[in-house]
Image (cartoon, rainbow, N blue to C red):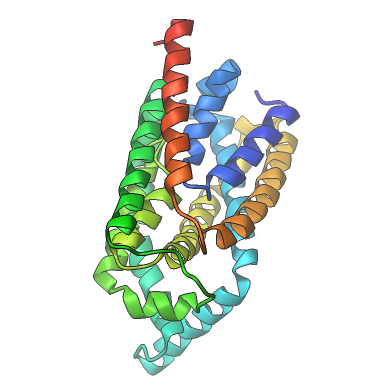
Length: 295
């Protein structure tokens, strides 16, 4: 099962790594392996276990933190959406962003609904997560190099992300960014990382790519969590609901702090530090596993 201490640690880890481009699922797998939390490690890859409900609550808490932080933007997006439906045309940046987010959400939502369970049980393993964490670092380096080659820098001044994204992205590009999220179903690949890099290749700067990534993460994480929320009340969770809720609270608080930091960070800085972290961490964990005789 899981202790309150473990739930809090994994909750904090989820809240931070879901938004930092370094893979939340990959880190939860590696952390359980690193500290020899054998029960949790085994439950992560089981077809049925309390860990699924634990992930659901962590994701719902993370999505709520994003929703609260970007609440003013979401009010604009929702109003723009209903205006476009009422008028049967998209005539504002708010409405256009609403439809871009819908287009981008569909690919990963459908794929996750069908394949998430199978991929989690097959790839929630330490060696897979470590290798894919290295791959994630390489993806981030590619994005950073692209920005340097095109001499694009983070925003020097505060701009309106809704207007920037709406005026830059096409529906096709939004779908491509949303499709990139599918890679995050593999433990070790970061959802925010692949969507930010895809946003950069679509013409957005760091700040707008990051904000679009966080806005895009909100409905898909919240939707997936609410869809599986009934699992929280299953018999598999008997005796650990308190730990799960405490973990969710920790995830929500840490996610809010993380997005508040990253929203300012990407206004002036790049993906390179996160890329180097993923590469160094994965190589170090692989070496440790070889020394331990686990691989």
